[in-house]
Image (cartoon, rainbow, N blue to C red):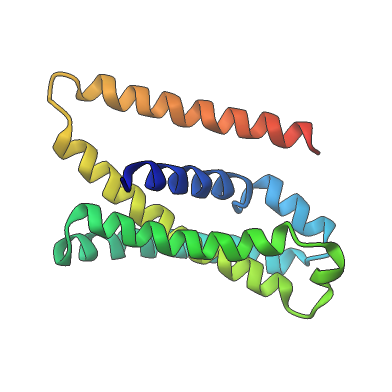
Amino acid sequence: DVGPKLYSIAFVCLFFNMVLTNGNLMVTWLRSQGLQPGAIAMFRAASQVSGCCGTLVAPALMRHRSVARAGVLLQRCQLAAVMVAAAIFFSVTQWRKWMGWEDVLIAALAASRVGLYGCDLCERQLMQTIAEPQTAVLLFSFEKTMQETAGLCMMVVSLCFS
């Protein structure tokens, strides 16, 4: 059954996109690694542009494939980029001495946004077409509550390890 595997991959991608995002936690870590503010600004801008590209790519993929297949493809693209970023992020400090590791990390994180935003659109489209009208508000409210709870848990874990 593919379902549990996809749920696990989605959760891993969500976790790494919360921790390895262009937000304050990542910016602070990049500064502690000696990355210059201009490069961090470019990273944040590239992440926003990549997210925008994801919102443009997803509808085109949904027209040529089914919504579910488009979502899986975008999720796999996101997973590949997140795996590269996570390998660099969690690597031993000595391994990160090679020239250009920052560029690869930043490019992988920015590229993961295409899959993140695109897969999110596919997921929303599926939810809107599957949800019954009388339970849609309850379903979407519960989904938002779970997202916020997961984000809070990830923040608490990151504070415990900082």
